[in-house]
Length: 211
Image 1 (spheres, rainbow, N blue to C red):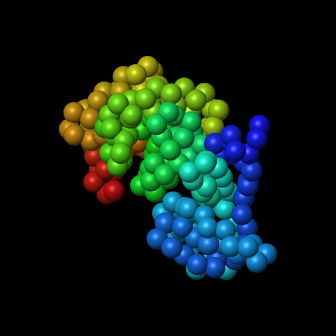
Image 2 (image 1 turned 90 degrees about the horizontal axis):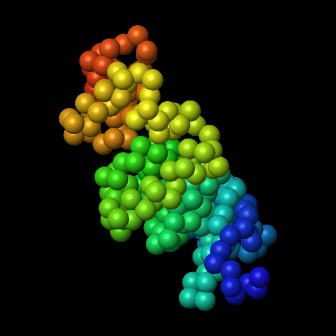
Image 3 (image 1 turned 45 degrees about the vertical axis):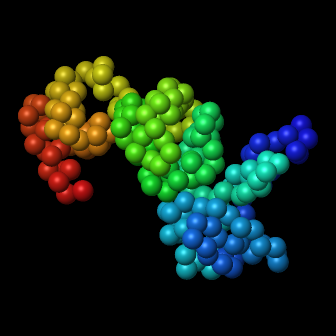
């Protein structure tokens, strides 16, 4: 495939060098005298600020109207970024904005929990797009293609959990106005099979009040 036809990918797998300059949403890395401008998430920006040398895992976008390099301090961010841009209508800038506003783990949890409200809170992501994201990515994440997380897999199975107490507690928190992903996360963090639903709700509410 010719270079001009490539949408983007692994042509530049990572960039390593000295941080020469920091912009609002990008950093310039000096690699052997060549300055690479790399667009980054807020979390990556925080990690590279003040660092003498960094290594960013990258996605290289090559289009006729735009050439850009997107970098991530952690491979997990890059994996989630690649998942997001695999969905029609989600470009690199949108994916970067989503990862700047939320962690890969929280995005996975919202997708597997089918939390449309949580996924549609990002700028430019309406409920239709959020639903498409969930539809196209839920099975990939649950299947472990990109991530393996017991918490995420448990969250995705809340409709078929062995303990009705767990699902009842989650449903109760959602009814109280919490997002489904927050409800799943808080209940899983305090879950014990010996606890009744009302006990799980009380403990989960205490957990939520501290956050």
